[in-house]
Length: 311
Image 1 (cartoon, helix red, strand yellow):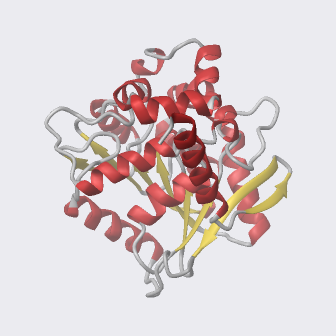
Image 2 (tube, one colour):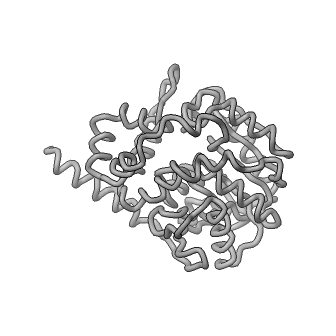
């Protein structure tokens, strides 16, 4: 197959994957918010990581970690897919936007499940809207530390790369190692032998960066505003039960910094994954059990319908 034919095929597949999702939109005082709403039962607010959107949050967090019997609400954060980027956006504003979304759809109490770059606004939500936050679950979280000031390319270069589908596609297709090094979160740590399921997970994560113009303003906001802003959060003000799930060999947010963060949160516990990197490659049944128990502890009994069945 010719390169251009393959590119057109893969881009059409990316558009098809996005079109297959029932994405809803509400207008709030903080702008238009796109979200996915699936399932029935106690509510989990799912906050996606960088390069994703509601599609990636559903695929890599909700479907992967939320067991049967919960309702998941997965917004696209500022600048991702159909969600607007307000002027002067901050992580605090993003937290307030989550509250505005919940108000608009009539939801009060939620457990917040956040991955990677979504952790900054999730922490702000737990502080600013603690009355409706039953608990906070942070997976491969963005964490405070000196690492926040290292490794970023110039903003213009970053934006040009992640806004360009031809460039992204070429790296994903022909230079996946370069793509992994550029993003860090896609890196497979030394000593980890990916299973077939892991290879598929890595591929999904890489393909999830496509449709770059629909994501790039959110990615720039995350990389240059929201991620480093976590250093300014007073973690002692997080008033809700918190679980931090982190791999020792995560090449993105470092494990020691995740432990240090958990120690500053008054009611936090840590679940350590020995190997698997930022994507937590591998089955990790003990960690999954801990996550399931945490959800049930703070959300109560759940119904038997699965997220997939509610699609």
